[in-house]
Length: 113
Length: 112
Image 1 (cartoon, one colour):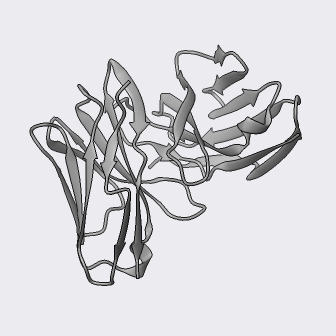
Image 2: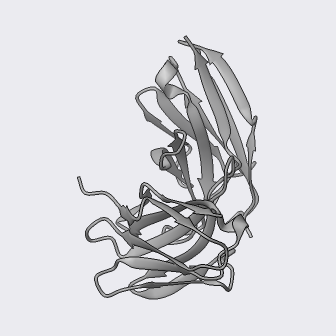
């Protein structure tokens, strides 16, 4: 079965650079969530989209923005990168209420030097 | 907002024994409680979930129980195997289209 796709899988950036992470949800899933997971930490919710509209916002820095496109894929744009932004970034998708389970993608490992 | 606490933070069991992981939540509006297993560097993978209108759910060696009054839910793994070794996260959410609030995770080690 098709899963959530994320690209790139690994990314190395310098401080103050920008990064764009992409997420392609499971086909027919209309809701996308972004989570940030630091080493040894639990996933922290950043932002979510339903039918291309932002549905909820968590602890997402103002330097980050995201959107969901007409084909339901989503992009997380990160600017003025800081060392503390180094983490695993997961995208998850679901299709509530029929399929409420959030299925996670393989993640993008971002390293900021 | 929701606060999910998970205990203990580490658990070591002998292969074949049972493991129980407990979580508590604070928001009485939460009604969906998934459990995820995460291996090092991999994605969280759903292993079982439960809704608030159900007290217990079982899937082969894995079961989850929910006590809404006490606001706690537990994961039970029977006949543990070395491949069960991983980090296990509990989570809670009030709506099926809402963010998940995770516990801090527990590292389960199954000794052969």
